[in-house]
Amino acid sequence: MLPRIILHNEISVDGRIDWITPDIGLFYELASRWKEDATLAGSNTILKQEEEMPEEDEEAFEPPVKNSGDSRPLLVVPDSKGRVRKWHALRKIGYWRDVVVLCSHSTPGTYLDYLKKRHIDYIVAGDNYVDLKAALEELNARYGIRLVRVDSGGTLNGVLLRAGMVDEISVLINPSLVGGTSPRSFFRAPDLNLPEGIIKLKFIHFEIIKDDIIWLRYKVVQ
Ligand SMILES: NC(=O)c1ccc[n+]([C@@H]2O[C@H](COP(=O)([O-])OP(=O)(O)OC[C@H]3O[C@@H](n4cnc5c(N)ncnc54)[C@H](OP(=O)(O)O)[C@@H]3O)[C@@H](O)[C@H]2O)c1
Image 1: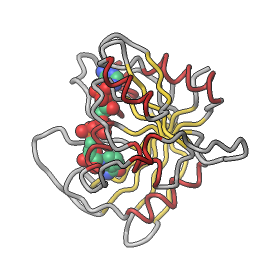
Image 2: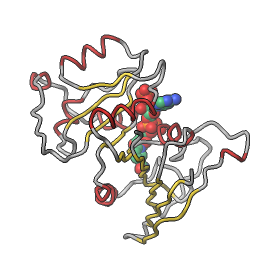
Image 3: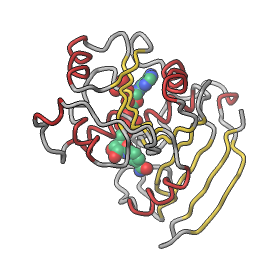
Image 4: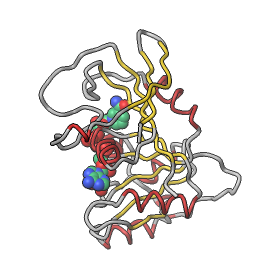
């Protein structure tokens, strides 16, 4: 079974995710209301945070302590090229009970060995990129994941949206306009050839939160 998938982003009024300064506290306070089983984060989003994370020490090789009553979500990252290296620091943040890496058949074997040495679970699905449908079905089967909140930039959002896998869109509208010609929106994907590709939405919720930030939620019409 495919889990329910929710995209949650803070964007400018023109739909961009770059240049704006998101209200991080508000963003995660609202995100926590879903009580997701897994947070799906794009590897670029994680790599951006890695810049400020410490290097690993010997603790990174110790098996994590598992507690069956732990209700925190899993952090799940598609990383077919094996670029993320600071799993120890992500584990220590405390928001997630553990991490799971989504790999593909093109992921270097040396990276899979790297993960094994650190007791990091991974799923292999897809030839080049990760086959997200198969990987998320496996997440449901293996860990009982039923609700996924996506915390990523426009690239992963775009792949999930074009694949028809998204159930809900949540956007915090930051009262700003960025402009520009680079496609740095929260939905990056190849241009459409036909209007049939337009994704229809059904309004769910509207709220003025604070400092003129508007929270909009829509259900994706399948
Ligand atoms: N404003 C906000 O709400 C918000 C929230 C989160 C992040 N951000 C920002 O977004 C930026 C990063 O966004 P981004 O768009 O560059 O990257 P991203 O969405 O964070 O990462 C791209 C992800 O998409 C995967 N991917 C790409 N093509 C795929 C395909 N065909 N099939 C399956 N998976 C595919 C990549 O996997 P591989 O690694 O396997 O290629 C990677 O995990 C950062 O600056 C971050 O700060 C903003």
